[in-house]
Image (tube, rainbow, N blue to C red):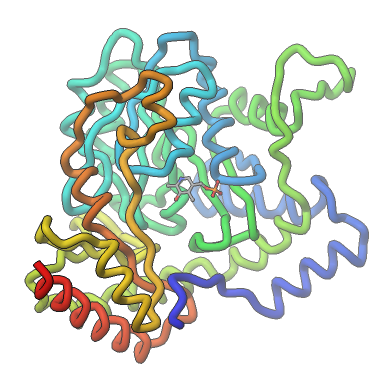
Length: 373
Ligand SMILES: *Cc1c(COP(=O)(O)O)cnc(C)c1O
């Protein structure tokens, strides 16, 4: 079986985690936490890094920085993970959706302006599958309307927009270090910001808003979103590999594209001239709407190839419908991608021979799906 993804772990990771165990620094304080926060913030060109327990937690903390009032709105793409929209609803805000671009799969910046109202407080932008969103026009809109720009860079470690690293382009950015991301801490995340007050709030919020001077006295409610020193030790070891992993993913993308380019039925990932994508996951979209990605995925699995479907739109989630959100809203590009998109094995150990084998299986399965129409 060719797995859809696997982390690159080695002796260095083992050594640093063992050091935590040996020295007893296994909890949510320690030198690896400090080093991981400092070095990841530095890597992205941002002043503060606040490590948390997941990417979802980072998004929750980011939205809590906004101090939303009921009815305040946050604009975000319909095509994304549930963590983005639920961070807004959890904090009493109203998520407002825009569709995504059919080729980069990132939010369609041209649709954002039309959705800005007097209640809009922020735009949450997601760099999809390693490709950066078009940030300059968003920054311009945010400045004109006094909005906070939150970057979800959970899939874009090391990606660049006009030569600048993703995660350093918004007012607050969020990373995940889940096992399938570019670098991993097993589970984990981080919030980055240049703003001193937001960083202080994030540090308090991840630790139940204990007060430094009077521990069990709470002026605000937070969460336990702490990362452990052991996770951070993994992160420190992984940091040294990030450029190598990105280079591997980019080479993988070239190899897949060479082999799949001639297939008329497939839409392949793009890279805008201003973008340096990491191709975190190599996604393909079946162009013919009568073909379902789930069928192709089943055929691939029979041939020993693991895949994953694309995200299903936020407006198609029963959990939100029950809250009265997004009912009868339509985002056609998101709907198409949710049914016709899947991503191929993209792991750090994927070899050129495996790319060859997967590509052959994909071409075969797509042809097989066509015959059944
Ligand atoms: C993975 C991911 C997250 C959530 O990260 P977790 O660490 O799994 O909570 C958030 N946003 C995007 C775009 C992701 O891909």
